[in-house]
Length: 180
Image 1 (cartoon, rainbow, N blue to C red):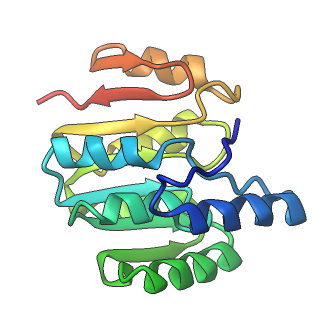
Image 2 (cartoon, helix red, strand yellow):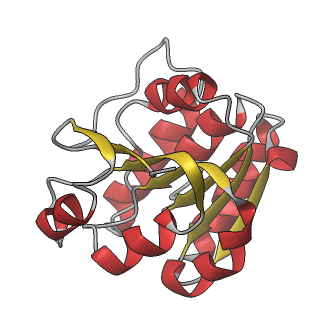
C-alpha cells in the first residue's frame, strides 16, 4: 500500500516522482510508506552502514543517508538506479550512497563484508534467499528491516527463520536484531 506524500516529508519530491513512475510504468517501484521511521531506526542504532535491497527512485536511501550512514542500495532496474542518483544528487546526498544495479542475491555477497548496522528489504514480495543474503551483510546485533511482509512471497518462511532473533512484527514490516 502506498501513501500520498505529505508536506512534512522532506523528500516529498522523490516520493511523488516514485508514485508517478509507478503509475506510468507499473514496474513495482513503490516508496516505503514512512521514510522518517527508517531514519529514526537508523539514528537510534547509531548506524554507520546501511544495506538496502530495492532502491526504487531513492526515497528510502535518502532517508537513511540523512543520518550520516553510508548506504549501499541495490536495484535490478538501471533506470531506477539512474533516477535515484539524480534525486540523491539534487538533495546533496549522492556521496553518502553507493548504487548497485543488478540482481540483489548476486550483488549482496559482494557487500557482505560491510558489516552493516542496518539492512533493509523493500524490493518485491519477500523471498527467503533475498532476506538471508541481506541478513548476511549485518554485523551481530545489527537491525534487519524487512518490508513487504504482507505481499505474500515467502513471508511466513522468513518469519520462521527469524524466530530466534529478537524481533517485532508490525505486519507489513518485520524488525529483527541479528543475534550476537
